[in-house]
Length: 385
Image (cartoon, rainbow, N blue to C red; front, side, top):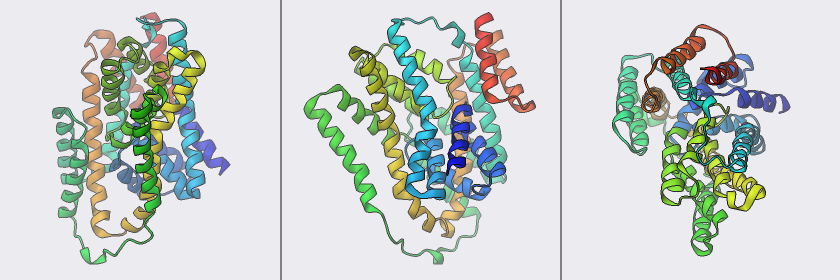
């Protein structure tokens, strides 16, 4: 257990670039180096977590912990995985408030966005290598990429994943006679997920207490967001900045900027946002806000894993489900491409930004420089150029 958690911690402090890069690190560290699970098992878990709302990479590594040691190791895996990112984002929120950075001039962060685009392009390349091997995989990847660029709502994501699974079944021989009734469904875990959702909404509506409202908002987003942190960010901006005005646009964007340099889950933006929303209660209030945001955003996805994973062990042996995995993963590769495109849009096309983007991509593709060092180089570049 200790060795596994240490490996999780190492990935947590070096996992820059979002879920696509996280997957490649899971593959390199947990499959190729440690043999904690097989290539096929990791692909299955990625497929399962892609179909669920919540933080995909967090759910994937938690499911790996569940597979190796049950619920206890799953909770410990989640804690170790999320701790570095949420600690940094809470600390940054306290710094932003302490120094009254209402209009922060964080010049050293100016190249983090083109750097992040390069990381996602690299992730798309790695996803394509792993999951896109047949002609219909290419078609599904392109379909998902175009849909991701065209549609402005995250709700197309489960539809596209469903289409990917259906198409994959059409191209592979499917035997529906091997489907058997699913046993031992843990409805208590599902009831707990729904119960927390309803109780937090009721407490927020009745008390109007900011802490309850923050938990309800983040728990709701953790329950409905498909597509990862890059889908969550604009939703949180609309809710907490434009609608409720808990923090300013510049404060929120400062958090998004530093997020590009923080390893681990992108959903840790919720930690920063809730810590900033509690700034009126000073440092202790911000610490509480960080805990609320972290718990609210990660808890629903993990409860879903506890409910779905035991069922998955039965369902994955059914040929329609097994055949669908290829299509779902190929569709996920398309989402990575669309994420890179959408994140590129606000980047100003100038000589330095393009140099950083292409230089970062070169380092990732052609060298073995550790990811954290690539980020440090980009920050140093921001200081001097």
